[in-house]
Length: 291
Ligand code: F6P
Image 1: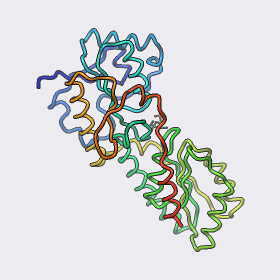
Image 2: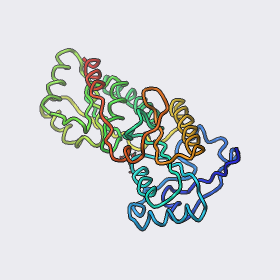
Image 3: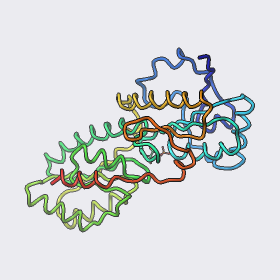
């Protein structure tokens, strides 16, 4: 199949300013194992305006782009939804964000990589927690959602997981830590999503009420980098393949994703406008495993 492929630099910025480069099998060779993106990425407030979207539509029409694959999270897809109203180009969304907060897919590209990075770090932090008999609050990314905190917390054996989806009650956290102490657990790891309140306030409350030494560790941008895991690479391959398949069938306005173990699609507008549900049963399981 003779498809001509170009990649826009810096996301929507490149679409607006018509800044692209040709992508060929040879030019993208050797990037599979790299973190980040060779096209660079950019948050683009200008594309949140009608003027910006119209500018983007103009570029697509000028270059006679027949299909646009948008790789990103909800911000990128919001832009894609707006653009689809101004342009005839077929648009397909490929979900890629460490936050895993895209509706219509069980998993986004990069999520597994970030979870593994967080778990590796938490395992190391546990060494200090146990040696010094301390409580640690480990803050992970996730923006306004707790998917990363939940999976990283569960798989690193966190004693407590705090997510924005469920209001954390300080008295219950303190009670759990006291019970842990009585049970002989002299160290605890609390994995807290960045969107779930202030770590310092919680640390102070715990120190005052429980008496144990508390340290805060913010994992930060390390979670967004590094070589992708095999699972992230597999999802990227499957989603990319599906996106091309859809474009060849002249279908647009869809987001590809993993749905109950199968590669499926969902309407882009629906994906943009629906909040991904949070799996409470996993949080309950994490609590059971932490007893
Ligand atoms: O959306 C991905 C994400 O890494 C969030 O988890 C985090 O809150 C945010 O991006 C950080 O954004 P910035 O790079 O603009 O600080």
